[in-house]
Length: 168
Image (cartoon, rainbow, N blue to C red; front, side):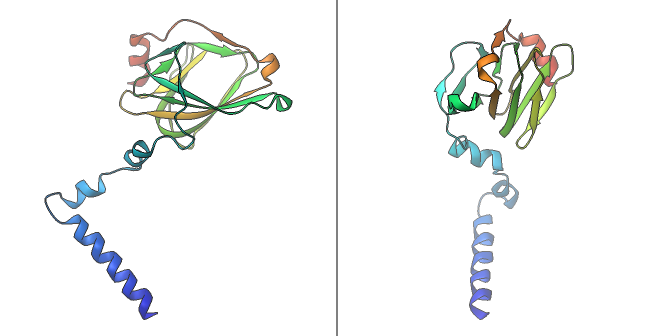
């Protein structure tokens, strides 16, 4: 018992000491979870740069593409302000948001703000886009079911004006 109390006092003392100095304790605490994630990179890794159908920098890492499952699972990371073009999926798509702040918008509807833990179920043939907030990297795991019949139809870019209106 005494050993546990001593360890706790040492830990509390080191927290107090680390909050002293030139920086206020609020500045020390200000390192958010997002800052820590950005230091380490996306949980599933960054992957390879995506060169088409995106405005800005994005990376793709395939996680699973077993043909017998007829399903692709992939990690997409968007640099701040990056988004993909308007597009649709013949069968639909699922997004599992894992870090940062992003947006999802269906054509003709208001955008939805996304954060880690959000799940987006995108219906078949729904024209939409998704991407990062202007000031945050954003990562999601994408799931494309029934790959053999679920082609993606890419359309025009999301204009700067459309993006600005969506994220305001």
